[in-house]
Amino acid sequence: MPMLRKTFPAALALLLGGCTLIPDYSRPALPVANQWPAGPAYDNQGPEGAAKETGTPAAFIGWRTFFSDPVTADLIGLGLTNNRDLRIAVAQVDAMRAQFDVQHAGLFPTISAGGNMDRQREPAGLTRSPGAGPGEAVYTRGYGLGFGVSSYEVDLFGRIRSLSRSAFERYLSEDENRLGVQISLVANIATAYLTWLADRQALQITADTVANRQNAYRLIQLTMQRGTGTDEDVAQAEMALREAEANNQQYTRQVARDLNQLQQLVGAPIPAALQQRMLTVKSMEAADQFPPIPAGLPSDLLERRPDILAAEHTLLAANANIGAARAAFFPTLTLTASGGTESNSVANLFSAGTGAWSFAPQISVPIFDAGRNAANLDLAKARKRQEIATYEKVIQTAFHDVADALAGRGTYTDQLASQQGDVDASSRAYRISMMRFQSGSDNYLNALVAQRSLYDAQIQLVNVRLQDLSNLISLYKALGGGWTEHTKVEQAQQPGDAGRAPS
Image (cartoon, rainbow, N blue to C red; front, side, top):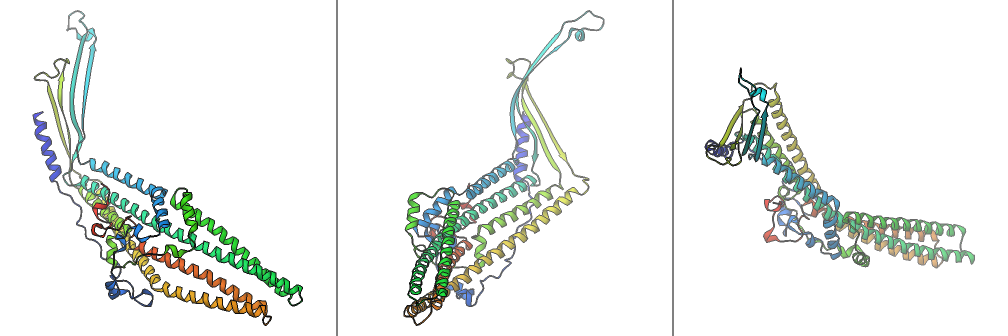
């Protein structure tokens, strides 16, 4: 016992003071330009335009602030509570945390305690002395209590700590992936709701078109009965009516599918009261009050995009594995120790002189392994090169996402204005054509062509407005927005901050 009390602290000191062979880490250089593309599509982007942008970065804008529409915010809140993909991501984080705890436990010895009783009988024939008569059977018994450490590896060269660091980085990576799932879910729910609103608008436009074409069909039938119309006019009017009726069924089906998609994203039945509020919203304009967000610089994404942070943590895990592979070339020290008390009776178990202990250190030095350790080191280095390339690819993808969204932000406003002008002009042309037809100065074909142009322009306007709003949501997501519920600029933590990860 005195030897054990002296040895264990010494081993623990070796553990705490040992080195690691993890390579020094340097973040790879940014594999994209450090400014956004500039040009007619980018709304004065580039270094000068980005410098002039002011406002809270997207990553710090809470989703309840960005999606100020109460219906949208309630749908998102419901989805964050019930969506199964997010629950899976949370469970995966818990699993990675548990794996880290398992790996980290290897840094400390496993101490176990136990007791035993041993009772034996030796037959009389084995106990008699040579030349003497039969002896008596001998009974022996023993009792013991103790504790011990079994096969504890002293982490002299940091192999176990390298593996623990690798597990910890994988846990952090999984937590960033969870946040990425959350950000995507927030954006997807908002986009799905807007899509449902857009298709309802298209359905209403189509229903109005059906009504107009029904009236035109009846009018042409009357003109034919009066002898002023032709069979061709009637056929054309009926074709236009059936076309509109088919479009009406198409949008009716699409609205139902949009609601099914939204409910799947939410992950639970949408409450009746919330559905009623959804039905009172007649157009997308009620949900398009998004605050302006600055693009910042591409380098900002390194601290704000969960997918980039996840890739970097995976890279750090691969870097730590190199340390473990290097440590395999050095000797391994394993300790086995036990201590306690032993006696042939329970009453004397704690008497003086019954103490017992054992201490068995073992050192193993690799001499020949047919190149296994060298191959493992090469594998670890190759994995790191792979993760560097993956990290750089994720950054390039993020740059692409933001650049595309900025191109949309710089062009959709003018496109919407032009499309609205197309609707206004088509509406005037349709009114004039119908007046000429009703006055008998023109045939129905020209009026039908004008009506189709108006319908197409109205549907296209809805689609462009949906694309514009969806693009702003994509920009918010691409810049790392959506991981926090409320905007607290003075307390804002970047997604990569340690304070964000669960303890």
